[in-house]
Amino acid sequence: MKIIIVDDNKTFRESLKYYVEDELLHEVIAMAVDGLEFLKIENIHKADIVLMDIEMPNLNGIETTKRALNDYPALKIVAITNYTDRAYLIDLLSAGFKGCVFKNSVYDDLKNALSNLFSNKLYFPNNILTIRNIVNK
Image: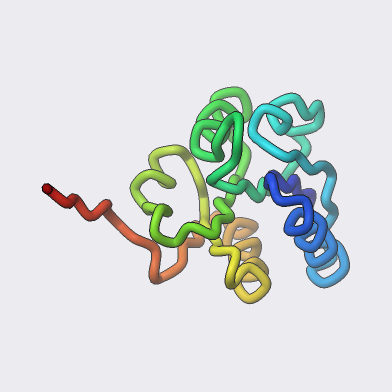
């Protein structure tokens, strides 16, 4: 599979690239630090999968995914996030994400997520929040 990694944390980007290429034996064709840089990549259409951080400066992963899918509707985008308390299934599905992996379990879950997406199935963790908790004060 050809993969693009979008994450503002350089160390995480590099370690994920190593894992994807050396352990999972897929090809990382591009990397970007935020949504704006990602949308400028010339070979977006060649990606089988995009691994997209949700919380990034300049243009977050939710808005980036909406824009990317408008131009490239066949893209399969997986949310990658640290924020288990801010990743809502409904938000991710409505934006067009095909899956989600939490950063604290990315090396355990990414292989299954990619396999599901390759088989045209969705992949979301069992513990993802389905709706926002509304607190009235």
